[in-house]
Length: 273
Image 1 (cartoon, rainbow, N blue to C red):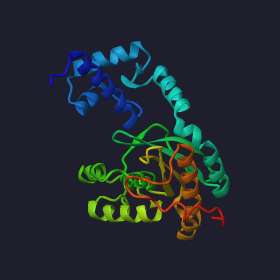
Image 2: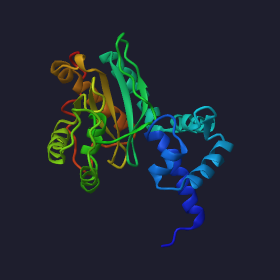
Image 3: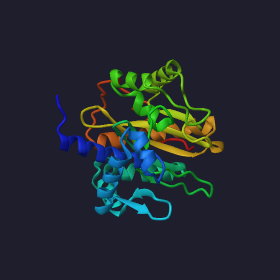
Image 4: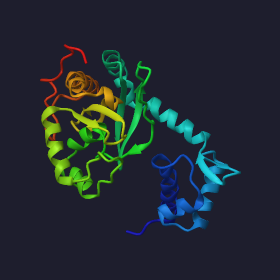
C-alpha cells in the first residue's frame, strides 16, 4: 500500500513530537534529524510549523527546541480526561496514607509506559517521578507487572527487541526476565531494587480494564534504603489491593485473558509496612 503524502507528513510531525516525550527536555535540529533518519531541511520545516502553533518553542540562545505551551495544554487536558487517572484517585490516596511513600499510576502506551499520576511521600527524603515521559516495560516494577500480563506474542516482542540497561541492576537477559515475569503472574505484583533508577525501590501491581486486558499499574516507590525485604512483604498486599480496586472500578471482573493474577488472596489491608 502506498503511503499518501499527507499521511507521511503527519507521521513525521508526530514522530518529532514523540521524541520530546522520551528524551531530553531540549533537542536540536541535528539530533532530531539523526534520530528519525530525516534531512535537516525537513526537520527544520516541521519545527517551524510546530513553533507557529505553539507546540514547541525555540530558545534563541541555544537554538534548541522544547515543548511549548500548546503541547502542555493538550497534555493537561489528556490527563484530565483519562478515565484511568480519574477512577484511581481514591485508591492512590488511601495507598499513600497507608505506606507514607510516593504512590504512582502508570498507563500502558505504544512503545512502553508513562506515569500519569503520583501522590508524593510525606517523608523528608522522598522519590518523585516524571509524568508523561515514556519508559520501557522491562525496567522497574511498574513496567514489569504490565509486561507480565501482556499477551504472549506482545510480551515476546518486547523480550526479543533488546533490553537496554538503564542502571547496573536492569534486567538485560531475556530468559532471566521471562522467569521473573512468570513469578509476577503467580504473586500478582512485581518489585524492583534500582532497576530503572539506581537509588529507588518499588512494588507494583497491574491494573486491568473491562475487557481483561492490562491497562497499566499502580506502585509504591521510594529510596532504596527504605525498601527492605520486610517493607516490600508488608507493602505488597496493599499495592495489590489498590490495583484490584482500580481494576474493578474500570469494569474488570477478575479474569484476565492472559492469566488470572492471584489478587484476591493478597487483597488485605491488615498489617502495616
